[in-house]
Length: 89
Figure (tube, rainbow, N blue to C red):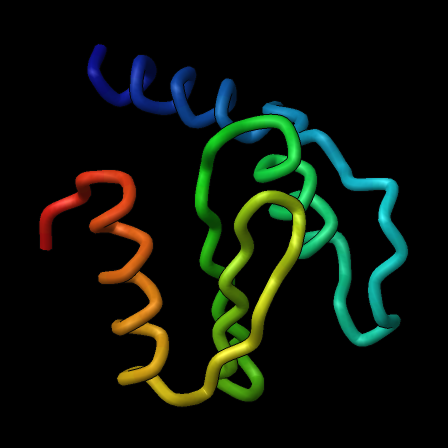
């Protein structure tokens, strides 16, 4: 059944272990940030995390992060990064 297959697939995703960074980060940031930093340290990925509480967006690349509350600034950063990596919007 598709439902079982779908359920089995979601079980696989639930069990994925992301690499956690060993870098010290401020206490207000938690496991999501450590995982996103770890992923960007080990891959060429770009991670964006959105705070449910504040709406603040963390832009994480190459193991470091910048915080954005201004969506126009973030959009410019993404466009600039996209041009370097040939990403189209």
